View 1 (tube, rainbow, N blue to C red):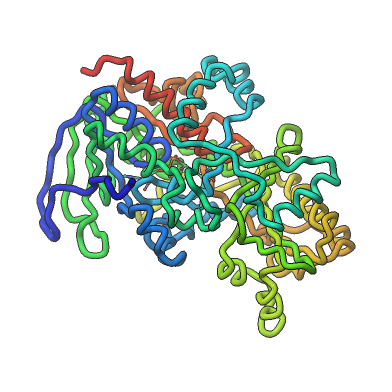
View 2 (cartoon, rainbow, N blue to C red):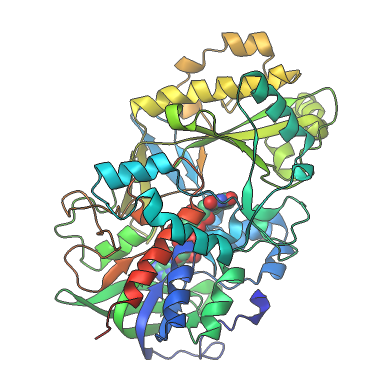
Length: 514
Ligand SMILES: Cc1cc2nc3c(=O)[nH]c(=O)nc-3n(C[C@H](O)[C@H](O)[C@H](O)COP(=O)(O)OP(=O)(O)OC[C@H]3O[C@@H](n4cnc5c(N)ncnc54)[C@H](O)[C@@H]3O)c2cc1C
């Protein structure tokens, strides 16, 4: 379906010409948040322009790339962005997408509603009265319908996932079926590098064709530099078309609009606001970044467990989420990538890499406090720092021990912990491993979920946007991406972002444009 997208701009190859266009709403970023807002506004009859810094890679073309090519073409910084660990916490590898469809084209398809206890906190304690479980229900329903959320059948669980579930059950924790935005998934397990069957309903497949059918125009390879303001009013944006050699900026694009919606993701939206001089009087801008710090644990079984079989993410354990802020998600990693991450070198490395079929793998994620900040780096790149709270640091050994114990309960021989330089451990080795004393700098940690750097709240003293996504102190400048999350969620965020964006779009549809 994404082959139907007409994306690009009116300039012929190599042509250099500055362009000015007019529209009702310009949306910056075509990911989970931007695509949703743009679609609903276009379907309401507005003239919508979507500007996206990354390229357009139709889903089937993406799915045909080698994984290393996918990393180079559509992962921001080829997947190498780092949030620098402060205060003894781990540094965290943060990955996002940079393409038409944003990070949504890289997801494992996992869809969670925002848990009720999180929404209760927002509506009762943060003054976001409309964001109660009841208030959000219809938006979840709308998005789940739009992106075809379905339950992953048990038959699509890998043997490794089942074993983790058996071990969890022995600890009284239940493995539950994941819900994902797929249609016709055959469980080939390479979702993160593009779906080769067009079965993942990422926003380039589910929403953007609708936006285009309703008249929206999408410009790919178009980096927005700033929002133009006239007092409190946003009157458009200034962008550069990246159509020069090796994607360098060649021509300028000026958009004059009646409204601006920023949806550039949590790493970029705060920087865009700062570059536009909209940071004065917004002390929370770029702060409160949450990451859902994530860890993976591998386990070797005597029998082959062939973790690559079945859906990439088929099941989860949320038994510890509400009280301890720990969620376990199944995952699968392509064999080549998995083999490359085995510890050791020489003969010892080879003997482990040869046993990839015997390796089960599972992920654990922390429902974190807001320890991160986004700064504007010198070369147009974000600089991220992350000062993990004491509470979250204490959760790391707990999370890793639980995962190891589940695997050993299911019969694993040894477990590979995400501790740099550590050898695999058996059950006794895990018990004696001084995990509580391992310095943060030695722990391998990643994040696919940067959120909250333009937090939604009830006052400009501690937030950046109001309950409707409008930037405090402006009349018509809105934010509708993961950056507006008031707190971290404890679950994968794409459905939450799309639902919040739907809510913002429905509110905007009711406003008269002038
Ligand atoms: C590998 C991976 C796997 C994931 N798996 C899951 C999952 O299974 N389930 C889940 O719920 N979540 C998952 N996520 C997270 C989810 O994809 C993101 O949380 C979500 O897409 C974020 O939406 P967003 O709108 O905030 O930003 P994005 O979707 O990242 O979109 C932002 C877009 O803005 C563009 N942009 C940035 N700056 C500019 C600029 N100056 N001008 C123009 N365009 C700009 C970017 O290029 C990008 O395309 C995953 C993420 C990754 C990276």
